[in-house]
Structures are given as C-alpha cells and as structure tokens.
Length: 175
Image (tube, rainbow, N blue to C red):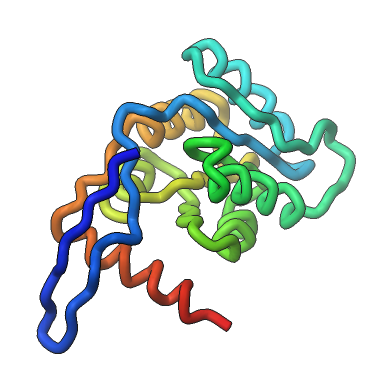
C-alpha cells in the first residue's frame, strides 16, 4: 500500500495529508453484496469479475427474498475498511441507500455511480473505495462497463488530496 504524506497549506489552516491511502495496481480482492433488489445484478457481476481474474468475496444476500440493505452494505464496507478486500461493490434497487449505509463505516468513501463519468470521477477525485449501483437502473452491460472503469481508475491525488483528507477529518470528529 502506498501512503503519501504531505502538508497542504490553506488560507487559515494546515491539513496533514497522511490519512488517505492509495493503492495503485493492487486491486484484486473485491467484496460484493446486494439486497434482494440487487441480487440478480450481483450474481451477473460475480461471473463478470471472476472472468477478469478478480478474487470475489460474496457478502450476500443469496436470494431474492426480501432483506434489509444496511446489513449487506455494512458487510461490504467492513470488508474494505478492514483491508480484507481492496474495494467493495454493493447493489440495491437504486444504489443511494447502500451508499448512505456504507458511508457510516469509518474509512469508507462509497459512491453511487450510474454512468462512466460518475465512476471515473469517484475514483480520480474522491478516492472512492466502495461502489454502489442500482440494480433497477442498469443492465449487466452498463454495470460491467462502470465496474471495469471504476476498478482500473486510480486516484489522481494532487489538488484532490486535501479535499479527501477533509472528508476523513469530518469522520474523525463525528460523535
């Protein structure tokens, strides 16, 4: 894992940039989960990811029986936060609710993506480590394109480091 440390001076503060880690070229282990609304797309994405030689750790659900998305979003997020997995993917019906739940786990920057622009930006600018998708919003073709781009796009750092670090600072102050 590559960690970059620097000090960025702002108009009225100094923000130490040691809290954001960047993994380049090491994304292999993917945690994936879904609720009942995302289950069919999750199953298709597991096959898609395995065909690309990713190690996939399925966090459930394992059927279309009704379940609560926070349970699975938390499992995916914790697998990433603990570094058991490099990145996570969570699918519910629309993708929004899972992003909200996953972002409650310390160290997680979950982004709901619905096209290639949001996928690229979430990685380049925000260093997102969990991707959430809407199973009712896309088919496997679009989902596969989003996932492929998201998994292969690096965080650009630069002017984005202070912003991402400020997100982490908010998280540390949260009570």
